Image 1 (tube, rainbow, N blue to C red):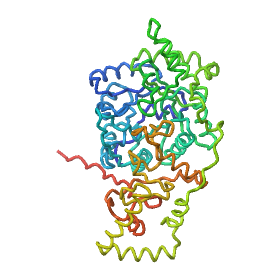
Image 2: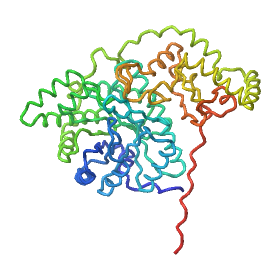
Image 3: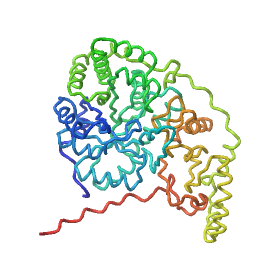
Image 4: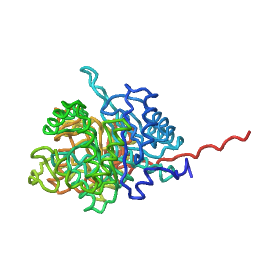
Length: 494
């Protein structure tokens, strides 16, 4: 076996195995909080009965913070089990592997695999960010390492709190991809809509997916509510009705503390009643607050149905998977029909063999290969916004180029979309809305569950046709080589 063996005392694994409703806390490793203070918090939280782990954040909301691996090590030393947020932003595939090996060496098994928020603007400057892999590909990578003996427990994010058809359906499709790739459990993003919690649970149950889900329970203060109401940070949203209530609560002598702790406890009780695996508590690092929430939620657990309607702050007129009418598919465009014909994956076998021979010859003549790449690029850049990645997956993405996504996602939208708009550029539509609409018009929505591997970055600026027919690119059916982990060297005898 490579790496450390499975821990006999991983509270998360034990809780999931035993089917016991459990509690997480989110520990935000903000740059504004010192390591010493984070350690102090962890030590106090470790003493809270029923609290099984702390999610250690990385770049929460796009803001730089402490290295989550370093903080996870400190948290573990204080007796609190860390669930480390591992993000894809500005990390190469090899860097992610190195981070995972480091975690294994520390004896940390629990990893929250997420794409990560895009870095925040500094003034008027929009920072650049590189996403070598997306969250689904990260789950696949961790699962490959697990198959070689590294005992990781993989958690993933999902947001049922999406109120347009494309955003909502794609969240569920992407969750199915993550589960197929190896996710052990999921954690919802922030929301205050029990109807959406029910929807997610029903969706999984109807498909026979037994993956446990922790519901997000955020202790909502007035300041945070004002930000969330503007969809800041990405993926967080609070309705105008709830904002008004929280603002009024803040006028009390305790500035609304009792009211928000009670709302959190009621939400946790509802989650238990709905059959969720547990509550993921954010918005406070106070051990006393966490104790209050857990104790109160246990007291009112039997009466959870009384609070279900009370915590239903959805978007008026918003989309619900089981209740909302769905507009008829848009007519397929001529370009889509044409691309179906010339898509390499649809090439008949005899012609495929001929093209492989011809393109093999072209490949051996640099000037011809370059001319083909330029001609291909000239066509695709005007039609699809092509960036010459050399790993074309237009067919799998309904002829929408993934490289036009600021995060270069290849397996579905990130959790930061809001009413179909992009997280990074809110004035632009998310490209995955077009992917979904095109798939719907072609009756191929189920095909969107196809796993798309990360691109072979060495092929940037080369012809995707040559790469496809000569099997150089990474695509469904032709993924990158499996991760190979060398055994640690034996200790030198003294």
